[in-house]
Amino acid sequence: MRIKILILNLLLIITPAFPQWTMKGCDELLYFNPGKGQSFGQNEPYFPNNIFGLPDTNASKNAPSASPWQICSLGLDGEIAVGFSGYWLYNIPGPDFTVFENAFINPANGKVFAEPAIVSVSIDGINFIDFPCDTFTLEGCAGKTPTNGKNNPFDPLISGGDSFDLDVLGLEYIKYIKIKDITKVIKNNKNHPYYDPTVSGFDLDAIVGLALTKEISVDQNNTNKLLTLTNNKLIINLQRQFHLDIISIEGKNLFHYSGQYPTVLNFYHYPRGIYFIVVKTSEINVCLKYIKYD
Ligand SMILES: [Ca+2]
Ligand SMILES: [Ca+2]
Image (cartoon, rainbow, N blue to C red):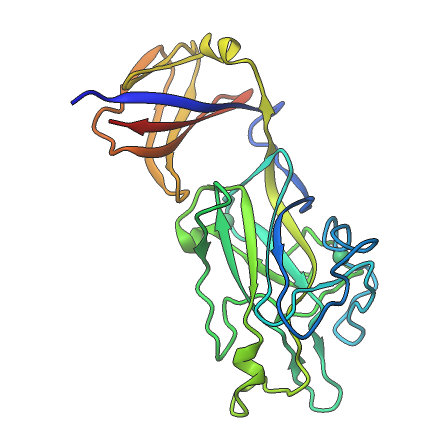
């Protein structure tokens, strides 16, 4: 069986020291499909800057963000996907990103006014994997924890919002985050613990990444000095300690290798599909994306 490896895209991710993570709010819109019943903050001049960057600093559990300059309502069943332009989000110990909605404590009944959503993540922006979300308790969903806008938005212990850990899905790296409104599970069920007839859909304030690494596109020939990917072999010409991971299109770590000498790795036994090869040293992160087919 003849196997060809087609390099579709070659990316070089460089960090001055490893690990050194960037923390920031999302700043890339992949797509937005508004739902029904609400159009607050969905258009210019508010959108999409109202969901980029950090959460509303005036938001609290008693005074939720209510400005179209800060909030975009997804509407019932609305869906939005965003990313961090030129960055990858990595799985570090503990939470990896936080989703800020404008949940608040309803003074009339002391309950959280929740407009929940399912959170999903993706490497390619096409195939998304859902975080488990209990539609009754809202455990694992976004949109149930108020924002503490005066606190550090990069500290999940005090920032408020709902934080997510890629460990739950067994993923090492992602590029995109999707928010899908499921507020109808509350609105249409009088027995729901969060029931409120006035809920109208998830209101997105911000999504903050806690471990991002910048990617820089480089000429393929330059990268080939360090890495050569040909047919079913990867030749690594590094003369120092390195770590290599092979990541599936779903973000799962298929293989890990540590070494310090020039090495040849065979991939002939991998089924056809899209893979990512991440090579790290003390100074660089290199990520190769390729399609293998026969
Ligand atoms: Ca905002
Ligand atoms: Ca994590």
